[in-house]
Length: 284
Length: 185
Ligand code: SF4
Image (cartoon, rainbow over all chains, first blue to last red; front, side, top):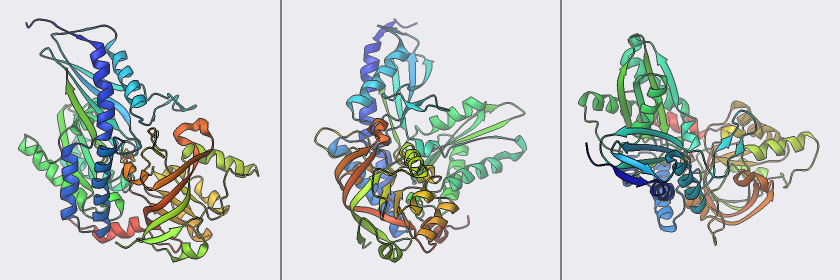
């Protein structure tokens, strides 16, 4: 066993604060490049104009240090804590929430979290709580990934408990149907995360984690890579296009994550992400 | 694409001249309002009271900005999903509202009200909040400051870019555009 390494949770707070701000100001390079590349292939003049606006928008946000999109999202944190790490100085989750509080305050980010969702829907005023997914991994590092997830695209996501007999065809139809019904609402071009297998809570997490991949990357399993290609082609044949105004570029990419499931089940989930695909990782 | 320059408040003649697919650049006042503000505006109208701005010819922008940095007029300021305002829009159109700016699909009722009342629905580019903020030169909260990002503000815009999605003649770019580029695989 390795020596125990101490990490003060104050470092976690500082890292999360910085992640909140930079993730919202700087569009990841893979998405930026994909938007530029799509300008070359998009056939619709309106679609090309929208893509040009999105590239210019990312340039302005980075230069002026302002958010790419006014919906600066719900802060979703994936934390991987090495089993040789000893977290000191306070409560780990409280330290993450504090980082979100400071980042959304100091970064002039919009506070978009409401408590008592069924009734009062009062704004919590500091964008907390964060959504935290922690896993324990080998090693002595703490890796923090922030995804700033906007409401417009999240609202278009879907979960289906299919019958095993529906097979891949059923899954593929459900993905295409989700994107089709979403139309212009999730600010296309979108990025599609698909989870297949597991249980009801795990399949949605798979779909969300799938969105952490780089746009343009190929799945290491050729079988899954082929499934992704097929879905991307079908989704881009819908004609929805940039902002739903008609065109070829409905999605920039489709990512699938799968795991075994119960012999009686076939859970599948689609997590829709907008072109404002904001995520970033740091290691402490 | 050459954009048509239009100014607010909108007249019926200008609204009638607009067709689905037209690119426009809007100059003048827009009224920023989202869900919570719409709920209050509709409650006022139903109670027979005055709303906090003149609805005649008005254009509402479905938007809740991020906070402005010191020295900036406004934070990032792109459109929100319009569908959440569908329940309120027809009543506002019956009281003079002529234009709506947002993103995403509208219901059949809203589209019918646009034909009946001569009104127009524009899409601004969702997720282009930093770019759109540069076209906003004035920003004054005129009602419900306690709602924060959901307050009603009067925004002065210059050459604000948008595209006509639903015109008052029944044109619908979301349907027409998609139909033009859909294909079989
Ligand atoms: S869907 Fe994404 S790009 Fe569109 S408004 Fe929401 S966060 Fe912004």
